[in-house]
View 1 (tube, rainbow, N blue to C red):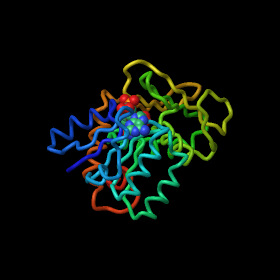
View 2: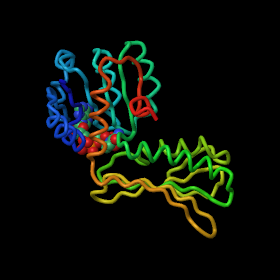
View 3: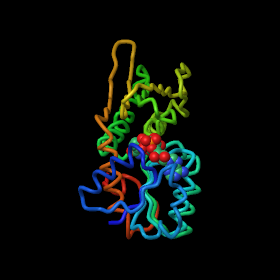
View 4: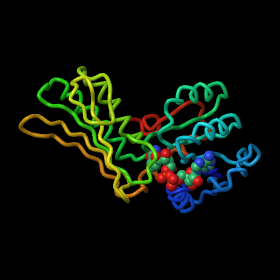
Length: 238
Ligand SMILES: NC(=O)c1ccc[n+]([C@@H]2O[C@H](COP(=O)([O-])OP(=O)(O)OC[C@H]3O[C@@H](n4cnc5c(N)ncnc54)[C@H](O)[C@@H]3O)[C@@H](O)[C@H]2O)c1
C-alpha cells in the first residue's frame, strides 16, 4: 500500500517503522519544512493518507485529502469543533474518513469498561467521578482528546452531570478533568470514583506510542475501498 504521511513527527515516525516492517511504502512524508510538496498531484498517488499533525493544521489537511479522493485516517487531537463540517464534506465528496482520538485497542477496551462502570455508578450518589490525564510536556492541547471522549461517555451515563471543566469543581452537575504534563509520559488516563470511605480507580497507562501507531496503521489498511465516516467501533466491531 502507498501511504502519504501528513505529519512526520513522533507518531509519523513510529507509524513508518511499523508500516515498513509490513511492506508498505511511505511515498510522502510531510512536515512543517516540506509542506509545499503536499500538492494534489502528489497526494493522489497515495492509496491512503495518515494525518498526525497539530490542531491548527488537521482540518486543512483532511479537507485536501477528501477533495482529492484520498481516504484519510486522522489521529490529530484538539480540532473536533470542526468534526461535523468534515463529516459533511466526506459525505459530499463520497469519500472515506477515519477518526479516533486514541488508536490504542487497549484504550478502546478501557472506554467500554468506563461506560459500563459509569452505568453501574449512576445509582450510587455517594461516589463522585474525577478524570485525570497525564501526557508529555510537548502536548499542545489540554485536556487530551481521549480525556474528552471519556468525559463525554461519562456525561452520557451519569444523569446528575451535564458538563465537564478542565479544573477542579465542586459543582455536582460538573465533571472535573485534571491535566498533568510530565516529561516522557506517552499517555495515562484515570477515572477515580471516590466516596468518603474509599476510591474505585480505573486506569489505562500507555507504555509507548506503539499501541497508537499500530491502531492507526490497522485503520489505514482497513479504510481504502470504503465510503463514509468511521471510527474504532466500526473497525473492531465493539
Ligand atoms: N489519536 C491517537 O491515538 C494519538 C496518539 C498520539 C498522538 N496523537 C495526536 O497526534 C498529533 C501529533 O502527535 P505527535 O506526537 O506526532 O506530534 P509531533 O509534534 O511530534 O509531530 C507533529 C508533526 O506534524 C508536522 N506538522 C505540523 N503542521 C503541519 C502541517 N500543516 N502540514 C504537515 N505537517 C505538519 C510537524 O512538523 C511535525 O512533524 C497530536 O495532535 C497528538 O495529540 C493522537
